[in-house]
Length: 266
Image (cartoon, rainbow, N blue to C red; front, side):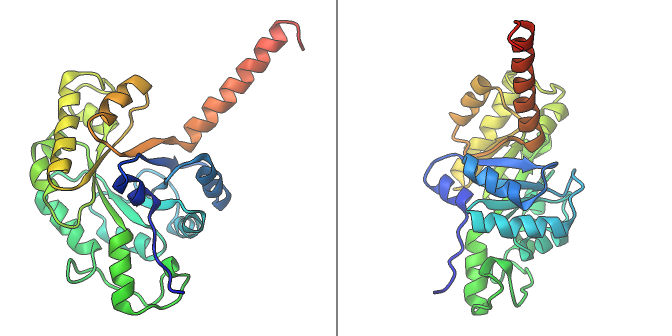
């Protein structure tokens, strides 16, 4: 039976549900991918912009992620469409492109990462997405374009100013607000309840909706604050990072045991 590519994050958003992602930075093993899938996450965030993970590790994790039913999505350095294409050739089911500020940049990215006739991405004969089998080229490229997510990071006031034109670009799937960078660039670092920040996020969500795209958010983890942004229709969510989850769980357990000790139970 022919392989049919599936992207769990895309399926969640199409059903108007949250696509929950987890950033892997320290726990860079294939076993971690299975654990994150078991926890209920929909996509794995692999970071080649700020992290030290080599592409060969990305490829192994991406292949395993597909087998676990969790979508591997890779962030690359600014405008590095060549590395983005290599990541997609080697198992990724999507790319996050940082610091996109204009429609011209968005068009360049989409053209480089979509196959003809929508773009000019080069094709290779065997892909891990199809278990290294070789389906007809036309079928393979059609499925790849349909399953791969092209995510643009909105991180500056300039990007927000051009958001309607960016959202209108064909081939773009998701507008992802980078909360840390955007608030920093706005001069209100980490102040996610500020009206100016909320207005910027609303503009992104509205533009995405107008042009049939999805919107998302990273960097905001306070439950009440995040709930307000979700009410804007944002569905592609960076839930947190492996090290943050590890520290939170470890600190809670150590604190609990220290309390038992001080109460005389130990």
